[in-house]
Length: 331
Image (cartoon, rainbow, N blue to C red; front, side, top):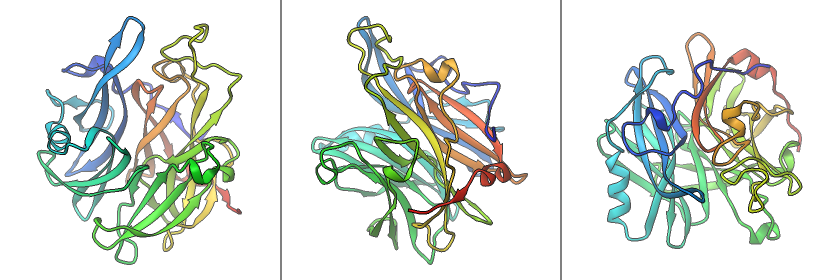
């Protein structure tokens, strides 16, 4: 297989965090000012009846090699301050990081009193940042391309409209463009659930894309739901309350360099699916969710992913091997 799990997996877990932590996952990762930086989601709370996430915060970690991480001693206070200052916001989570023109942009999901929104902020020092935009509900899983295309910012996103998809969980990947990262438009469908042979419920953007000679290489998450199969979760498989039936897999697609809303290729098989214990067992078993992808100068690609909504992991591959998985896309 093109992708190889790192022998140090999980590269970050609750045991590595110097403050209260239970579930450490769905991190954004990038290289910024000569170092690797990770912003991770931390859901805190464990009750005798099972996992019960009582609150969420974000943590920041730095690394010289992208494997061993030094976690900052306290949760990142800026997102907490933003939630506290806006009475509509409830929870700030699922960060994604992209460096554009030397500045680090953070995409995030935010629960509000009236739905889930996707937002974008920018920071120069990870001490403070400015929120540039917050979408209307319901939208999330936003990721930015690492450079402007034809002078515009480009993002992938995943709205989830149950009504217009017949009250079914059929959520798809869209793209939008912006002149300033504040006002977004030119929205279009990029990839639909029915375009992915290993998805029957929903898909969405995963890690921010990386640029290759053949196109923008982008990961996505794909969900396969089987009500007849109960997967390991906080309710064990033999628990009569067990309700977890969704397998999350990582997919791979190639987008046109000049028209990044156009899919030109896709891997017909999953890039990564849960096989290891730390991927199969946790808060939600059989969940793979990439959040960071880094193309190194030597052609190695580092893919960071949340596993079982519980830990953060790393897998690597050569960019040539990943491109070799791609087949022409036809809708």
